[in-house]
Image 1: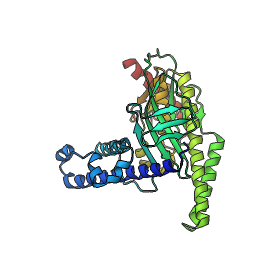
Image 2: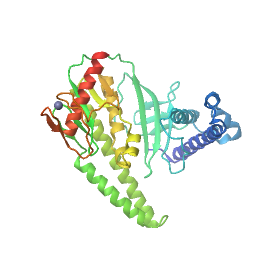
Image 3: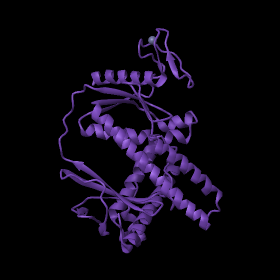
Image 4: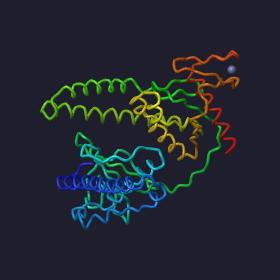
Length: 360
Ligand SMILES: [Zn+2]
């Protein structure tokens, strides 16, 4: 997106107002939570105001797209629900350093694509470079506008289509075992899929530049220069990763009618096993989301196997189970079966998926 000066000012205001409203609402929830946390039933019944309430007290909120504020409330509500249902920690306040973004929705033609421009609420026509064409049977649902740390503006457009999806008869099935050092191992040839070398090289470069940044004096000219370098590299690696995950999920969803994966709790896993950041950053979450919707579009299926299913311990040949330590790379069974640990798991995951598909 290439906004003009006035649009940049309004965008900055919108990011600020969204953050402001989010934090206000979060503070209210925090207070309510502290008050009733020992009485979950009463806590559950508490009602919270809408952003409209703040507009009288803080008239500057009227200047920006009101849908952006409504979405801030929805985001907070989701974060709060996730906390409430034990899926996440208590939502955190958004700081100025937090990613700047807001979401708006299509209502009565307020968003429109016009030959190199996009019409957006309050902003009117904003110049943009479109990366992917939106076909005529797709309808715009919402737009998320963001500003990167290096100062670039992006808009991602969420669409929905009215096309009816017919379920595919499932013939070709593959099981994937999540791989800590890479992405996954698949059940058909035992192929280990890892990120491309150029991506891993950019990651190394990023780590090096981050180290340099940490050694510079915060706020100095040299620090600022390095900060920008790091921000650009971060965006580059994130894009490389996303492109690769798009590519891989597309390949799998064209080659197979169903993909079976384990329903992993990545957050719990990195905590329990002390793997720290590496598991989080592996991209497995993004990958399975992309895979899920690419399969769904074609009437195909992503099947999740229970996280307690003993995919590692089980012999994929005779079904016997035995303990496996993390360092054992080979699965050797008393029945004579020998295979790579992850390959054996991938086959087990596939077979469990086939069982679930037969039940459905
Ligand atoms: Zn066996």
